[in-house]
Length: 169
Image 1 (tube, one colour):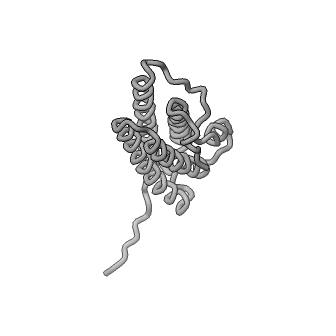
Image 2 (spheres, one colour):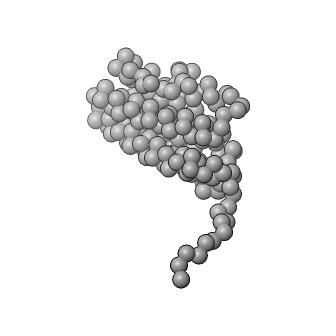
Image 3 (cartoon, helix red, strand yellow):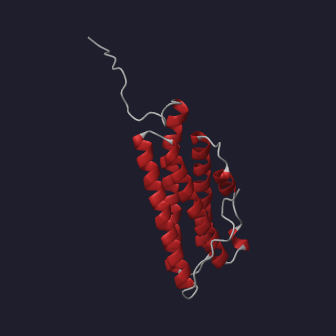
């Protein structure tokens, strides 16, 4: 489910993108509070900080394009389903990872489409940067998701102590 960027003003598109970055940051924070695995916690902390950086990039871009005005975060998000799920108490780690992956994919497509709609080269470059970052976030999440699917206790485990098995002579 992607948003038709061509039907939006650049101003509204940037506000929607900002709202989505805020919601995605909240998702990573919520996920971080649900897991014990220190590696996954660190990755989620990193992703939350990345979303915070994206918010700053978008807010600065908005202010430059729209004469110092502050962007509204009252707009709907690029991926409205995320805000609905964030309000639910019983979402599982795997469900939230799936949703976060979907949100990153939608954001990647959104920024890529928006870059094609704007005329200014500098704005296009910023949006292409965000496109590539969203793609990288998806890949990072996909790796963690795959580990969670293969090992149901992966995100609950706070260490990696396994009995070692000797194979060989």
